[in-house]
Image 1 (cartoon, rainbow, N blue to C red):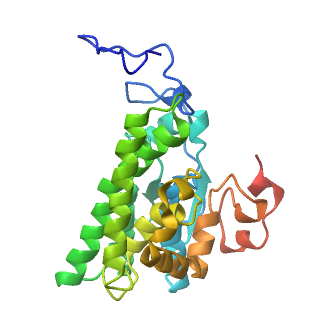
Image 2: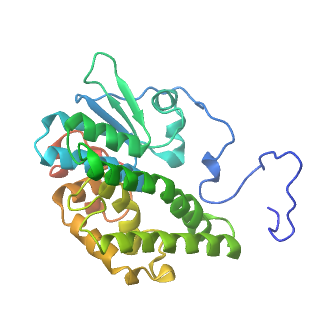
Length: 289
């Protein structure tokens, strides 16, 4: 790897033999499948293929919240996709999501299965399908969708920017860490100022905007993301902390955060979810490494 202080980009870029870092084994400059593997299909119309990262948690929280409201049609199977092992490059997964990123949802309730990829699109699809957690019209709807898309534009600076260079890059680059730390703190200030005015991001009601933002920035201000809480002085964002704790007390949010999770305390993990009873009867096959 070249020293960043002396590196001059070549006229034509080509991938290095190894880029280093935690995700080097799955980084590649082309799309498409690397192997043939069909996606499993369970007994429910909604089939989710995911991992319990912040992007995956958004969708499982939404599904659990829908079930808590009594929407039986939101029952789902959540299949574990081990991204560090390259399972997102199987032919079945790529057919469901050509971008090879988790999560992806396939809805079998119609005559033809409908794929939905990108976590924000999945949240909006489910909200519109069940008529919940998204205002129907007017200013409340516009506010909700604005904050949902704020997250989709902001989180890459937190994850692929700050998180990568602070926690995962093979060497620490001061400029990169400073650049993204400054942006993440600006984002936290945006959220804190908004949540000083209203209980939830879209206003008085809990919506898909909160479900999208909470797994990323809620985890960050609780010191659960990249072990960067002290570095970013997250305790100073009092309104984000209030909002974070309020959502964390919701039973559906707690359940959603467990699904497809493969790290942390064993009691916080449910590797796969195929029935509501799985939260109570977490047998060894559901927790298999």
